[in-house]
Length: 307
Image (cartoon, rainbow, N blue to C red; front, side):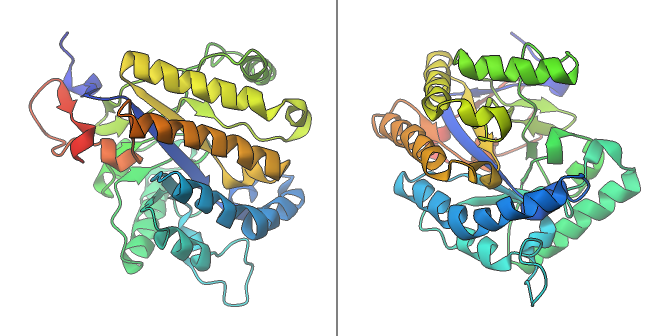
């Protein structure tokens, strides 16, 4: 099958498990009315979740993609530690298992809802702070999965992004989308897996499954259902030689923290066993990229084991 350059897919020699995290602390809700209520959760994230999560990734030798809001690169300096987190970014960099740091824009701006000029300022501002920190970057996760201004994204040096999950309820009104998401968890519906595909000059590595937080009514959903769904996603990726892309916010682990972290441990440990058995690779987003974005081949075969 041939593919146009605009929709070219990236074939894999081995299935892949990818983990991406939206690291934003209080920047993620500054424009929302419940921002003040969210402060306590961000404090828990900083004090009780962050190091344990890094420890889980290191224990299973998983290199994840941390999409970091640029303002978090800044030192607190006596200001709000929920808005500035250079110390936490440094812990990511010092993790014994290398982690990827990508962009979540400078201030958690929804790229699809701002002007081109604003988008340019967001990404140039993020890139400047990243370069000052000595970071190389290729990946971006759009805040609230709201893409926009692909040309600005490319010009700013990014090559891939996390696309939206493909769900059967995506076109429904918001109340029905929420219900559909709950049904997926309750029934442990197998998540979608996919191949990376080139869209507007950027590689889309679609999300497969949100590791759903235990907020609101979702706190009554047992963690084992989340684990079962993830395991089914891993199995599907292996069966189809595709990417199972698990994603979440560290803040999502601030309710029922012990149980939620234990669920992640079980997912990570199974993925690690599959990797060690040669059944799949575990890669951050940037490691899925082909070596040459402009390659003239219409389908690119990527041997993940050699990256």
